[in-house]
Length: 335
Ligand SMILES: [Zn+2]
Image (cartoon, rainbow, N blue to C red; front, side):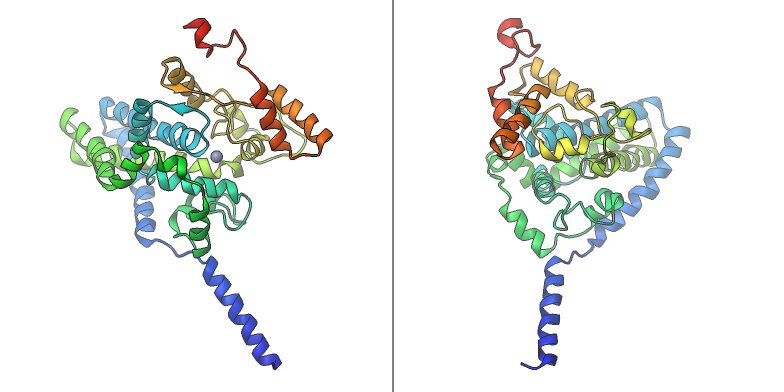
């Protein structure tokens, strides 16, 4: 084979590989996001100058419920299985997640599992060497590449497929989206709080979407915000957002099955963690999985001594731990 045909063959291979990894923009979604940013920002002004307190409080409530559906629902319950939930709680979290307008639970869990499986690699739908903005925004605006589609098929979704509530939402997502994410937040201020349709639209829909979509997308991008600063971990508190950064992403991406691991850089102190404890106290959530410092310590010792993988050793130590007798979730003793 001559050198010209060899060069052509390798060029063909490169272009077919590029095709395999190529992601095209979803233009209707790009247009939607442009509207979210422009009209949502206008919504801030309208909320400040023209909306009633009832509308503002109702919008705040629906915004918080949407965020709860993403953090406690999609992320901690469905993607990482950090606890088990009764059917009424799963139904509640499914309705909340629909109000976030991010897409079905099934699609978000599948994408988040791929994000963890391919973290720091090009195949990760939310990671790019381009940084935070890609993970936060652009990653959502592109279709999956053929390579990613193939990888998504390989993600084990059997637990999700056996959850009837999640599969119901997947099947009727468009209908549920229209009712919970459009009609409910628009109609309530318009019909019950005497608001004009314009105010209801700008505040109830566009401003709420601006907040909920951006906060929800942090689940996939916050590791850029709270990335490691070597040898220095001042605190687990959320104030690190303003002051410095911590080891939080390393913990979550190594051991994601901890119900106390907050999406926004904190540990054991966030609203999501508090809500899971409330659900547990109400007997709606069970089998809360967490990883104590003792288990991490023992697991590290075990890994050094046995030369086995660190995560495997820590998880083995977690299984050996029992809930302390005086733990507030020890229901036999306290409830
Ligand atoms: Zn995660």
